Length: 469
Image (cartoon, rainbow, N blue to C red; front, side, top):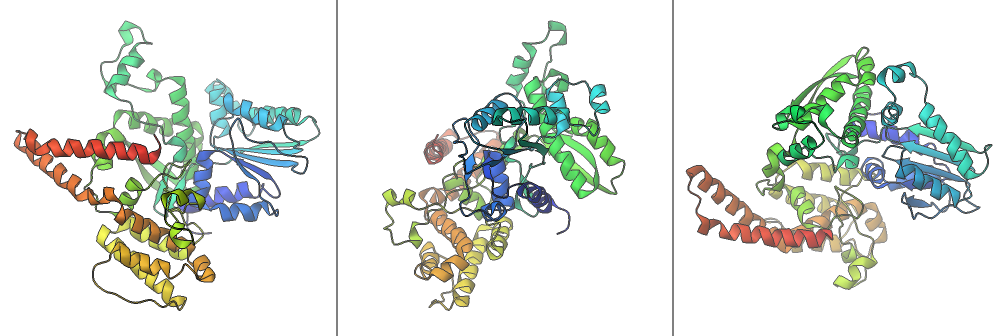
């Protein structure tokens, strides 16, 4: 086991879940699929299932059930086992022939008690018991049609999608966003005049909707599990009104209080409202290749943090637009390829120019190890040069398989460098600097900045089209 960190935390939790999957029909929701995608990869899931034909399905109301030859099912879900989620479980199981069902939820039993309006004092008395999960287990057997069948409901904190050893994302909370000033008016509409708030600074947990409070508690529960894995007693800091509410909830979370009593290490956790630094997310001043790749390539369906890489270049198909959907896309996550992971981590932390040179170096080294007839060229790295290196692997099946992850990252780089939107990146950066100068002078020149707004309109339209919105 590696040193405690976000990657080892995710992998350790997934190993516990994968241990339940032998010869099972597996249902995943989008957030858990993304966590698996970055943390272990689909190959590890296939190994865990172990049957000649792995049946993996998306958890949705219309998902196909299991046939008579599929008696076991595992559901891996990122959400509360309540409402529409339980209805979907019921419908899938009833149209199947399951005799053994395992339901894994990323939400702890303590949060399920909160969702079922169990008072804090009563919840404390239930420590070590899981009545909500036990009741659902009985329902699962009922839906399978035989109370003697086997059902298990487990909690596994599948919170993170570890993009790198030092960087993890939370796909199940992609829609969780800080409150905006106009939200104060909506919150006030449900409060008496004497208790109305004047600004975001006055908003506290008691003013939030039950749905939002539950979403915060789900995040807090996952973060507490991460701190437990790391063996730390956290100190919480917050920048922004919404972050203050989350930090306060983590500080007062009952299971976290008990955990801190025995923790040997210490850690600082800083929560920051994204709305306090929107220019960092939408500006073009970041000189990073990964930022450009994610900005211009189409989003991988069902994912929040990965893109589709066109792999037609490595096939016998002509590189025509109508052929792009005939070949499964590549992606950025390469959890089972050591060399590709090393390149990916380098791309995350280096500037654009150095990153492109790093891609060339890895391609050259891979081609040399496979004894491919590579022609070295120094100087500026061009998309054509990278393409010529990638094409060397095209007709060599062994080399293609050995370096598939690296080739996906190489093609992502080529497609980004050749993308028409990338050529406009420096223009956007120049316009942003001009705008900043004008704002500093206090006399914005409208004529200078008109191209900026025209360009941004064009970029917004393009991004919507690329993302399918």
